[in-house]
Image (tube, rainbow, N blue to C red; front, side):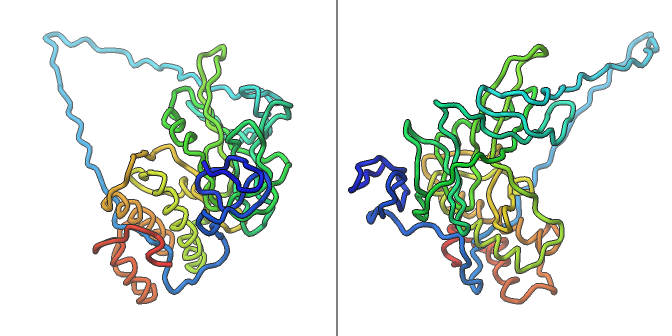
Length: 327
């Protein structure tokens, strides 16, 4: 933690501005800026082809001496019934909308219920920043630690995933990192509730839009620049991405790209260059796929030569250890 020289408040280690009084913390690095950055060097500090795994299943056939025909049976698969409208989840989140339901998972939009003892998630009022701030102490933060603007008081909408198995267990380790960056939508809460049909498990994250299926190349470049800068921040926290980066991992908020899915990440005390290169390769392949529609890299005649060279280095050759290498 960093102590503010003016009001003596304790701040996050990476804070550029005091969250209590807005004072510039001169010992901290310059605040992250989600505004436009030069496109000549694409902050796609990205990757190499994703790793593919082969799976094999062995079957063992047994032959009975006197086989008896067995009548096929149908088993009714219980459906995870959604919670009723108006419900409160974990005494914190209020039901807003049911988005989808399936056999084992439901998805809702929710907002934080107003309680005197509840410190709510807040967002930066600066339209060029809009960084999400989760509460980190007994006192509410008032100013954005990234740009120094005031934080808004209004309640935000969150995506709440509900499952009948504990598929969000590792998220508690991500929550402990207290991630705060303009291009990161961190997990907000992870909890479970006992229901009449058994235990249900929950993950709350900020709401965001999905990536378009056929975006403009210029948009993908902007998103790559934003995500690469955020990936540098994630790497500084020891985060290693999963086996691939998909559209589910990246969201859009007013055309600003955000990392939003941390279900498959790992956290290590220190990342090696190899792990950083692989992180960036995964991002690079995701950007290449958005531009070309292909999940396998090859030189694309429709991409500019400089961009082909970038992907060649990121996805096939030595790769990059940092998004900042290309900014």
